[in-house]
Length: 131
Image (cartoon, rainbow, N blue to C red; front, side):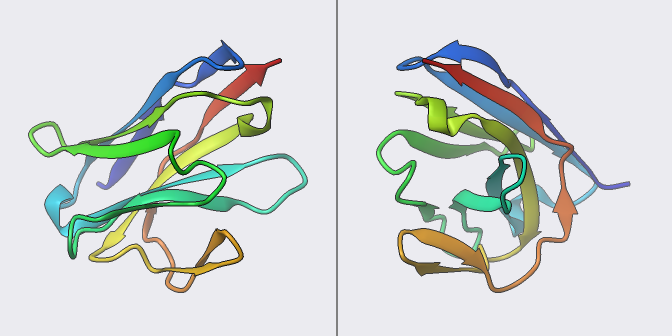
């Protein structure tokens, strides 16, 4: 049974930090790209950060570049999204997702868009940044 369990969300003041975790099971963690998405009510889900399995590179949307970092703990099959210098506009539900090999995104206008679908999804964790 494949499972992705996102955790670590919460309420934080602007300028603060949070670390999200995505605990996975049921698939070979090292063979999959792990991506982080976020969604605000009424808006489309947005891919913000991804670590590719193909080359180990990480990519970030312009909105979070320089503030968010993604890392994998292969010993625990867990991915982390370290978020710093948080802004009120970072408020959203954050999801982790997994797909084989690369991130499957195309970059356009500062954002990433899905080219290939993600096979597995976590349940989401709420991040609220107060001003």
